[in-house]
Length: 330
Image 1 (tube, rainbow, N blue to C red):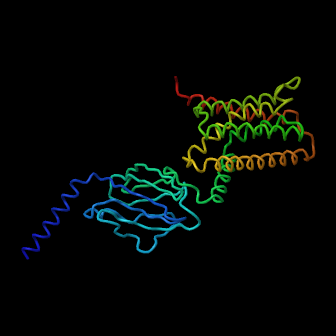
Image 2: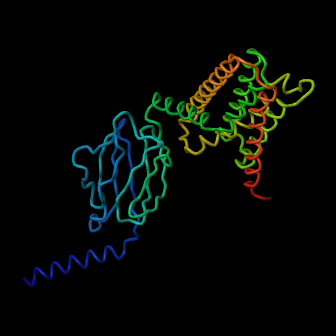
Image 3: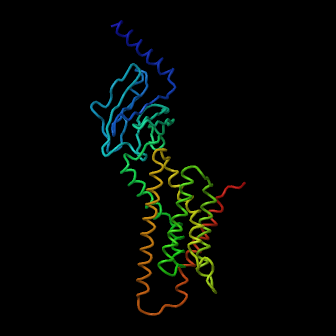
């Protein structure tokens, strides 16, 4: 009995010694071994292995065989597989580990690699795979996701839609409409590509304020009395000039994704396609509503036609004032 207690005491002392010299940070290696297959290796002293719980995977992923395995004297390994392609930039791994943080490295199947430090938050460590250059789970999946992101961005971007609506208020015929929309598309595609590829950089706060001011300008041009102005006669010129500005605004959505370098060309192409699809959908809806209103019986007062322009200009002016206050001094 005495010997048993001595051995137990010795083990407790050894465990206490290990924990006393532990810095609370583990090194983790995520390796993509095949499409949709991964190994997650944790460098941890055997005396601290009880601090490492089973990771929480994305819903479509599951462990292969026994979740937890000893990979070496100081290593634990978790192997898992994901359905419908590889881990994506919007996936997360949640580590319920009693650690202060992890130095997490990822090595992807194409040879790309990335490493980041992730601190613990509320007893867990959340690994945002977008910060580790995760892709989009295959070319087809990536194309669909970036296209959908473009559609979502334009349809949720009220300022961009108001600018397009202001342009529609001054366009007089179908041919002019096509030229105007094409000019806007070409212009914002240029600056979107330049910003995403790192060829140009403009602070977001001044850009957002200038976008609001561009809406005010076009709305005011549509309300101007007297002979048609240059903007009314050639709306594609304004669409192109201000489209360059709006492209920098679109670039912010892609910048937030921390795109892996290998997916930048595909992301640019598909995101832009998505923006155009959303824009075309918006234009079709506006033209359909305008056609229905024109078909309604009865005469309307002349001031009714000016209401959209004043409403757009007022909203954009409020945006401009609000965004102007957000520009840092100096």
